[in-house]
Amino acid sequence: MLDICLLGTGGMMPLPGRWLTSLMTRYNGSNLLIDCGEGTQIAIKEKGWTVKPLDVICFTHYHADHISGLPGLLLAMGNAERTEPVTMVGPRGLERVVNGLRVIAAELPFEIKFIEITEAERVLELAGYRITAFRVSHNMICYGYSLEILRQGKFDVERAKAQNIPLKFWNPLQKGQTMEENGVVYTPDMVLGADRKGLKVTYCTDSRPTASIAAHAADSDLFICEGMYGEPEKQQKAREHKHMTMAEAAEIAREAKVKELWLTHYSPSMVHPKWYLNDTRKIFPAAYLGEDGKTLEMKFEEDEE
Image 1 (cartoon, helix red, strand yellow):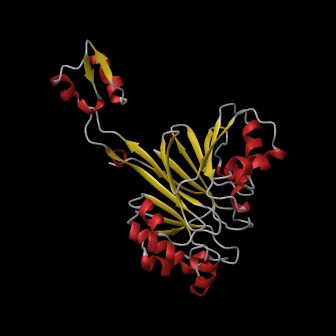
Image 2: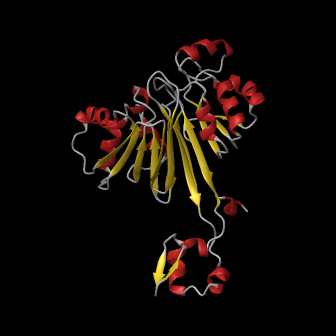
Image 3: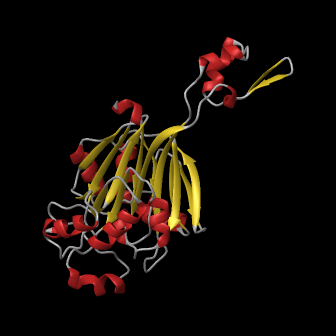
């Protein structure tokens, strides 16, 4: 099971009732955060979640509304008595930017490990996730992220018995380990069925529509994407500032065949995103407005039966 919380939905600046856009996930006792604008730690507290098990923090880019809340968050993690290392992922310059912000959060009881992305695409295995970072099109280097929870096939007892695999190796093989005894090698594929469907969430803000977004969002269970503007007359402004309209996000969702779209990163000038939802749903019916604290409990297919 994967818990998803859209902590905030604002772009540029926090507003009363609208924190800056960021996403927190929980899986197997480990938390992951994407972006950390001003006030993110307050949004986490309002949700009733905790910062102590926050193992991975990913940044899309280094505009202030996506990273300026980091010093306070790190201090809150330290005050929660976290001592385990924290891994940060982001575009080139990550360590320099974070260390600059840490002038006011210098003393921390945990290590920070940095993974700087320089390629157009980077795949990482962290905290039980397969994280794919992919470059998008903003007015500075910016990445989207796909988070996947992969699931191996079920253990087949009859196949294990038929091949006379020792009982003591069943559990290690089920966990993906290769075992050997008396010159005989036993591999997981000897006892596991086909891979089962996992879970996939794709997150993208601050970009013009690109083929890479649709390609990486393909078949996502949830696609969270910026809808900076809802008004058709703001199309030119979206192009100039390298953002997306709600309609453009819906077109990507349709092309990528995602199950569900959450819109986020609203312009401060867009006071009522709901005014534009009906037109957005004409393009992609499973479009929903992101709201601060909006949560989804995602279950594997077998769990839903």
